Length: 293
Image: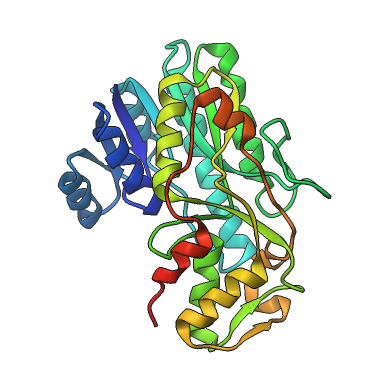
């Protein structure tokens, strides 16, 4: 397939582009800067200049492709307003991409987060939340999946709280950045809450499989580690950075404090069984050993 990818130069997106190219696909990747365009070309893909807010560019990219993988998101979590803006921008982008593909039977793969279910690990059958800080993302993904009835092979790959590579990425990467800034490897709450995780290279394989074979209107979990205790994550970060490990007050984590403090394990049994996906890369706690002081 000729695949249009948004977010193709990020930690996940760059892995997806490489995975697609290595499996016989060609890639057109959205690039919002000269540096991004050069990175896309260096990877062997074709850049399409524009940003997530450039809806006409998104429509043109989708129109020229055999399928679309949407990954781009503005990861500005500095305030609730910043998160709301990012969610609104993504929602409009997904609507534009989906409408362009109506009636074509072409695939549109988007991403979401694994849902939170009180008292147990979430599964692919659990609905996404449509409330709270990032509830708009759940509503946008539901709208995309609804296009399955209008001739779009839509699917959602739900990513865990940490998608990592070489010790970087996701919620764990944010804990590392906060530790570097504050001089303490901290964790919210009592640290017993669990976060699921996956290596970016394994997530890329699942995104490719979803593009190639997932039925319309389906959701999948890119979960390798069902849930590591946040206190254990912070302990590795602290050891690698030579910093003390302690609980930190909620304000340390800004608008994400409530999400960070939530126990949110997830499973991927159906994904592995039905799509034949099997993670092979290092677990989160192993990968965090790559952190350098």
